[in-house]
Amino acid sequence: MLRALRNTSRLIGIVRTLARHDALFPLEAVPGLPALRWFGRFLARLGRKRGSDARRPGLRLAAALQEMGPSFIKLGQTLATRSDLLGEDVAADLSTLQDRLPPFPSLRARATIEAELGQPLDRLFASFDDQPVAAASISQVHFAETPEGERVAVKVLRPGIEAAFARDLDLFDWIAETVERVQPQLRRLKPRAVVATFAATVRAEMDLRLEAAAAAELSDNFADYDGFRVPQVDWQRTARRVLTLERIDGIRIDDVAALKEAGHDTDMLLRQSAEAFFLQVFRDGFFHADMHPGNMFVDADGVLRPVDFGIMGRLDVKTRYFLADMLLGFLNGDYRRVAEVHFQAGYVPADQSIDDFMQACRAIGQPIMGRPLHEISVARLLAQLFQVTETFAMETQPQLLLLQKTMLVAEGVGRTLNPTLNMWELARPLIADWMRGHRGPEARIRQAALDIGLIVERLPALLGQIERAADRLADPAGVKLHPDTAEALLRRRRNGAVALWPLWLALLLVSLAAVLY
Image (tube, rainbow, N blue to C red; front, side):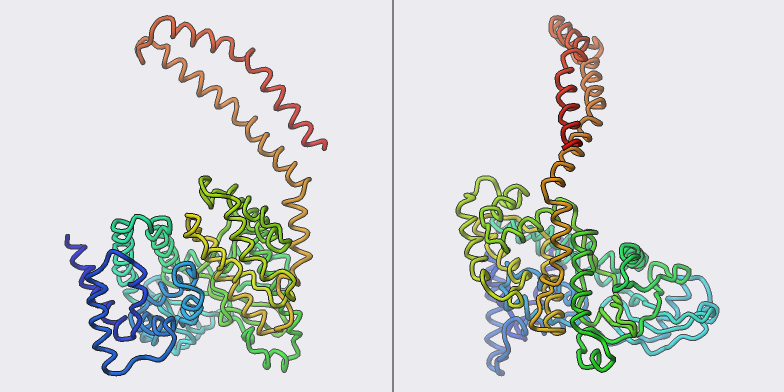
């Protein structure tokens, strides 16, 4: 009851802010909240008397979220991936939300560093710049130099940010829980799961050791790739609320004039960007999910230098295979295959019509057929695909939504570097090699052999479990069975090894055939 009262009070405050910006339209999309919508419309009418905002709805919503503070800025950036909920135009406007806030005092930053690292600042750093170079909703960054002469960037969490986010996350979860309870038809959109994913992302961002680990993992993945280098972590000066990384000097990747003036080949940079993105998504299944232009620089040697590893995405092997098969189906115009992989992955329920879903996929893919490659946006194709989810009861896939958002940003950077080139075409050789290696006939045979091997490996344990279960059932002190039933179980157990020899032989022959094929 206290939770409901507390969050209802806060919700009324949110409605007032939305009304002040004439951005109440998200409430109209949630049936079952008549009193709240009436209150919001009343406030909106009062606001319009003072003059309405002529900006697009998405920009008005972005302004309201910006005013409401750090958690709502982060929420807006997450909603920018949900064009299936808000529409493409609103989602695109929310993607403009800038995670920038006034800096907090450097004395607080110094105190946090000393408390976290257990040493005076002058022993940790030979110099420390009190003026932050960036200030966001969760942290801010200061430049410094270590006693060893290393130039570093020090990220420090905002004081009290954990408690502030905890209050807001509880509010978001309560709203999602209420929506699921009063509107069961919206459960397929998994509002609580989306909030949980958002909460996990935010909590990970507030433990800077996890960001350090993400940077180190990404660095290891690209150890043999010359065109993409991740800053090194200074683990001795890193803790839960402090992260120290190698300082990056370079030009923002969207500053085309400065890049050309410095002698960089923008087409080569686009190729490197496409290859690095493809390798992260398909080869490693671990990708930088906040790759806006302010998080990517080009150093003097033309190497891409990413920063800010607080938001990372992961795709398991099955999801990567689904994504590859689905995209290839679209690009080849094979809409039956596109539909099949959705059903095989379980993303579309089996009780839906595969023919109707195929028709919907054709409606999405046909307009891109025959168009110049540089005019094709894979990210927008995915966004349109997600918009048909309601018709076919397709469940939300948060990992794909995060990927779609990242693709959209990557494509935007690509068009800035060269509007006549398509980043996916530049990565085509890598895509072709990966598809041959992972989705071709030989790869499928290898996977089948591995699957059979796993079955063979697990079979003895499974038989042991069956045998132990039979022992328990036949034990007089255990479950009471009729004597004839107990005798039959024991007889089957004794004969089990003989009875199973055809299965063992079949598995052996299939495994051998798969390996020799």
